[in-house]
Image 1: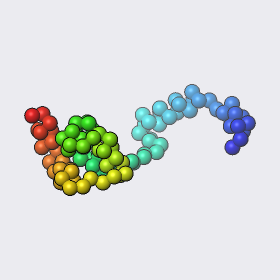
Image 2: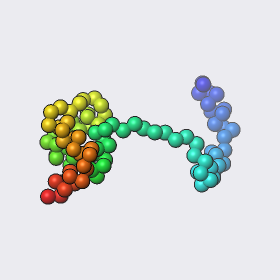
Image 3: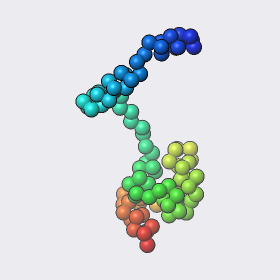
Image 4: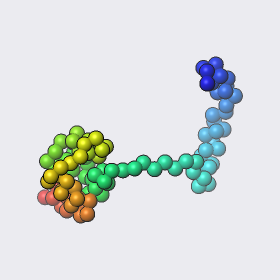
Length: 101
């Protein structure tokens, strides 16, 4: 759509009325679109532990940047880190206990 066509379309819109209609739909439980974002198993394990990325990374002995790379699937953990992540996924309370000590 050209810039001119966009301006012509937008000139005819009543943004206030559109927003009000959207709020009414939300209150009525009529959600427009539901988007589900897939979460990696590593991010899920960290979320279940209730720890921040930095605290979780500290427990694993890696940098927060490395943790971010794992969570976003750009790198994969190896060795002991993979074992610790398996424990975190199954028993997140253990990580909370260790961090609080």
